[in-house]
Image (cartoon, rainbow, N blue to C red; front, side, top):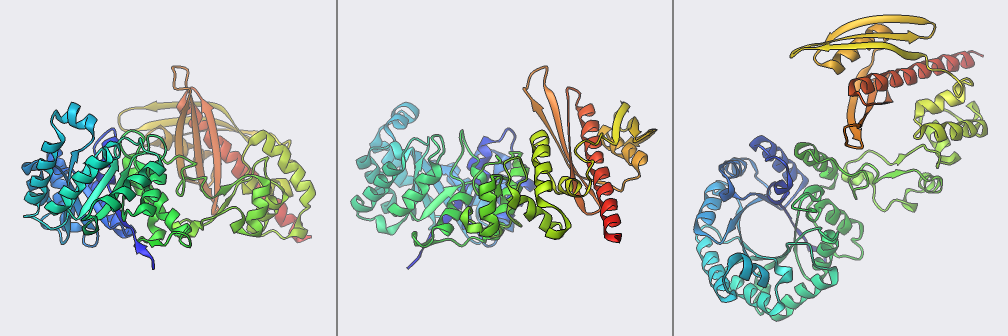
Length: 514
């Protein structure tokens, strides 16, 4: 029989501690609603005693969230506990989460007290909190570095006092999986009242063990996992809940556990947290990174095209993504080229795969990543490899004040030279409008990304853009010490890709006539 794993999200509390600036109330509400929609069991909305904003935000969230249980953090102090209750009392279902350090280093150097006094305080504060709710979680801060006999004594005391969930945190991310397994299994064996509570774990990623420790703890008997979306949190971060969720889902035949998660909301929630917290996802981040379902090796691509299970253990649709990405690079084989041509609707008899592949490899070695419009040009325009750029920059000037910018741009357009100017809300908008005047292209900005190389006074700005034209997405890249110039170059680069695509379509129409 499968057993349920309770998912406790602390993105709004532990996750926020890692941010350069605090989230405002509306941002926290948006994240909380997304967590609820995803099916998270318990949402830790904050530490009400830490600031008036935390208190007010928790209070507002308590009126909005209906399905997930809400939780607030409190030290072993009456005022902290009172404030958690006041902030969450309007909620249909809430928990008070109390913590106190239990390891020797914390007790002697931070608390400057003794284990016996710590135990007395734990018992008193849990009983105090019970007047507000029966749902009390107690966390043994730095529990993984607490001697096992001391930990057993603390846990037994907390359960006797009325705690219904006992959390054993690896607060500093020090513990290895086998050590964590031994801690949880020892508690199960040695604490005689352990069956009266749910064992929880809160793992940090200082040594990269957070998810591994959480999975190991489940196998040892833990039934609640605490973590954050995308693994954000103090120092190296927390256990990434999306990774635990998909590990349990993917290995469900060997791990007999389940969660109440709406899997198809995982990617959406991940992006919301990333955008609101202004923490970009690493491209190789497990489950939700942009490369998680991307394939560049020709051998891998051939396998994926024949059967996705050859190189993908997860289905991207399960987490709310549309499809697998088959990247076109110099590492790609003929199978990937044919796959992309088929996606664009071209039959095998409309092009020569050997000639196309040879051209493709030469261009990929020069350019790096190849896009579908490049493939079309290679297949149907014999001049593409040696063609000069149709659009090239002759001159540009930007003048800006506090409200508006004016861009003046002179381009060489084939054999012609064109000069235009336009006003916009900022330099990029002005450049964009001027370019439309010159080219008459009905283009739309989809994405503008600025990055810097070297991070010194001599830094080079790199601008990557995406534009939509005739239902296709085109890419452009520009490099310069002047980011405005880099922006102009990237747009012109994109324009040349659009122009070549138009020429290809004209060639295809001529071919079809004959």
